[in-house]
Amino acid sequence: MFVCGFCGNNSKHGEKLRRVVVETKTVNHPHRYDCYTNSRQTSDDPGGTGTQIAKELHECESCFELSQRQRGTGALIPEEVQKQRAGT
Picture 1 (cartoon, rainbow, N blue to C red):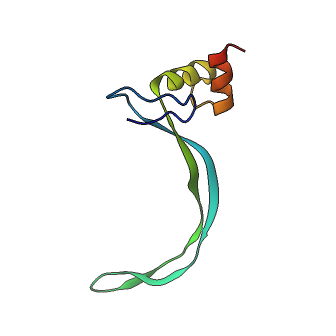
Picture 2: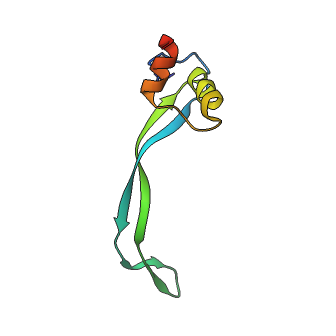
Picture 3: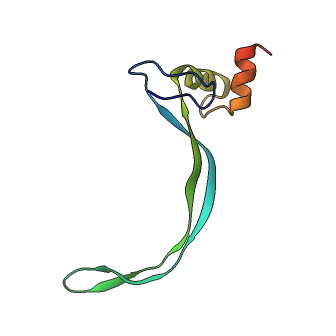
């Protein structure tokens, strides 16, 4: 069981959890020497730039259906869900 990050309701028993990425961050990975080894050779990890999830929310099935109908795919931000439920 979980608490929906959009509407704040507790989930029902057996309800499917959907994770929604709300925020990402860019991370620079350093160059690493001789990090991959096997019995015959070693190799370097070149490092580079990538993205990581900084914040994600749990979404209940009713909020997921609402977001699918409104945008096709993807999730709503919490304020939009609260406005939809309030009828404004």
